[in-house]
Length: 409
Picture: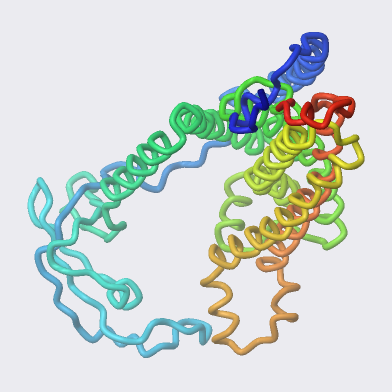
């Protein structure tokens, strides 16, 4: 009786188990993982090596307190739209704001930019309370309280992921936790401690993607083929990032935050950080591309059990070409969304895009996007070729016309 192809991608390896290949791949992945972990241990900074600047809110008598706005009174503060050095400022009124805290009322002045952005009675905010010893407390506006909406969105996201993707979704959430842990405990401290940025990015990304891929997609030959493609993409992006950063003379000093960081950590190589961010920023899309291509090869093998390697590669690359196009758009749209303020400012200034593109701030993002796109484009054929090599071998053509419908992987 003929069998169909209604099995999931995780069940495509039917037929005789390939224990020899699985064991060989386990040894290879284990060796790569061991090297990465040893390198991580060597690069891991001690607590004393990580520069720590004084927290502006940690001074004597300075505390951050929750408050609720009870009154907003606009007044003319002389903000005419031009500030020091003829730089534009927000024209309009400022406001005297009164807010209720657990310790009593707090009053402060809100500048024109903050006031025009919007603040109303009943808003939950945070204020800085400054109370030096022996002096009356003064207050400054800090920000709006966003803990509840952020937490609610995170919970909704997690519930939906688990509800739709079930165990795979749960493991993907665990993967997010692993990624954040590696970033906060290794990558960021190592960069601050002055470790070479590219080795830190490559080692950290290798460890992250090894754990995340197996967590989210299960331990299988198919997942391993995607992992090998991801390794290639990480290394390729790192090398191109280093070359592109040097070639385009990116210094990493493109904003006020960059200058503050350099002042806080003088030994930090900002150009190295730029190259490292090209690796890390592209991990999500790179992972998406490599997993899709590996899955496409396995599905093509199930649908075409007698196809030779060349035909299997060609079929999977048809999917890969579509995925490349959509992934490139994803990278561009992601940058356009995150840099909307800068792009709006360029438009308002009526400066040519070509002129602004060569500035440090925009140039960093353009190079980062292009390098990431090149890395994922190269990863598609490489991952496909690896997957074809590791996928179940083609079956011989059946002798009888009715025998070719058996499902295979």
